[in-house]
Length: 293
Picture (cartoon, rainbow, N blue to C red):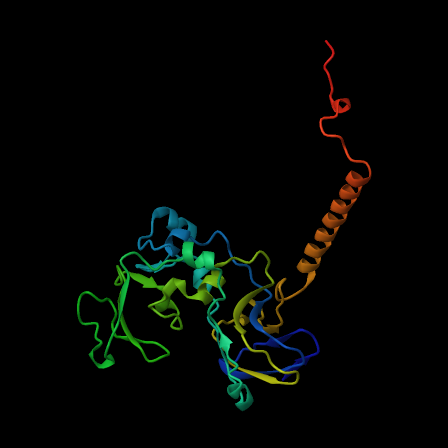
């Protein structure tokens, strides 16, 4: 149980494989982020064309992604250290009776930049999927599909799909089983992870709440702890924080904007007053400079 009287709180994620985490709220949280204080995201160990739909790994891509470009004779798609160290903990909000009645739930869509989803991430060329009308008749036996078995999503809908070069390529959903093969590299948690952090202590947005909590509410999360940090003596935690028009974790940036805006406003008032008291005559000849030969 963790409680802090601030607009944000940390809930540390420990080393057990799966457990329930409870945090007591003293203010109104809206966003949930994961903090990784001791890890660098290697900006040079990735290759953007692999995220834009290219199913083949060129020599240049292999060099950029080394050492995680292949596993034996199997090509990794996407390749590189960033994609293949994806934060794969599964965090599930567990509402109590009051929160269920109030329809409070954590939303995990809309957390990635729209520009990233539109221009930087795309399923492999030749990828296709089909929603089955009847799950009982949904098979992957046809050569038109590369799946070994149908995929059933969280809503119980059944799909079959095709990935090119599936026998020689390991795709994202095969590396991380929480990634839907239908979504693949366009999964928003993956897209958020792939936006590289500039510092070793960073946050990654995991979800947000449309409806707030009351002070004193207990917020419960179920953590499927898969992303191991003890091997490199790292740590991770869950952060619940409020949001505003200027961002989520601090008001410093907003304060800077307001300060600069205030200075500009004062400067504008000064020049307006000067022009009102002593206006400059339009086309006044005294301001003209003549070159003397």
